[in-house]
Amino acid sequence: MNKILVIIFASLLIFLLVSCTSTENREVENNPTKDDSPVTDKYEGEDSETGEEDKDSENMEEEKEVEEEIEEGIIAQYRVADDWSLVPINEGTNEKVVLLTIDDAPEKYSLEMAKTLKELNAGAIFFVNGHFVDTPEEEEILKQIHDMGFVIGNHTYNHVNLKNLESDPEKQRSELVSLNDKIEEIIGERPKFFRAPHGVNTEESKKIAQEEKMVLMNWSYGYDYFKPYFNKDKLVTAMVTGEGPEVDVPYSLLKNGANLLMHDREWTSEALEEIVIGLREKGYEILDPRLIETIK
Ligand SMILES: [Zn+2]
Image 1 (cartoon, rainbow, N blue to C red):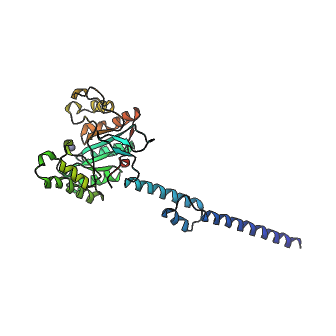
Image 2 (cartoon, rainbow, N blue to C red; image 1 turned 90 degrees about the vertical axis):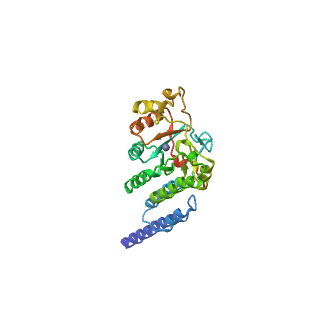
């Protein structure tokens, strides 16, 4: 008799425990989460053994969403100012940043430079010349650079001085648009930034860039294209101090938001790591160019 009572009591206890647990589960499931995003809905609707897995997938999905938003330029934190520097859009955003840009890519050293930057977790814009993506091998290199997370910009198809094409608006159009078509073919998207060769724009090229939804971008300073700085150590010093005394810049051009011009060159590739480290030691953050406002 006693045994039977114990069994009945135990069964009752187990029954109570089970119902409590399932009520808790139901409460969790019915609880509205912090937003009504389709991602959350999707995971709520799916049956899963443990809540932990749900949470992990949710976090991963959220991270992926943020990544996508950055890629689409939704989370813009900086804009290009009239002097080509990068300024925060909202108060509270770090203004002590510099932007790295690499022109005439991908001639010879761009992939190596991209690997160096990736290793240092430093973003950059690679401005591409069409005549450097003419072969399948070159196309593959551009694709790799893009796949590593770098931003690809337009630097015209043939690297011509657009002023010399002023009488030929159609040729100017083709210099910009045919390269965008080509880049889109290779990486699946059109460039969002345009830098004219030698920084020389025309009224026409500005109009075409606008139509193509590309932000115009020149630069604050750069030294690797001046002969005295065709040297790794000299270039590191010039880029990190902002001073180029051997080319009549005895003062520093380094400032918050400075837009740094570099090229696909041997000495620049050699100097790149020390340039990044030197700028960071001075307290500058290397800006992720995906945070720059683009044209919708
Ligand atoms: Zn160039």
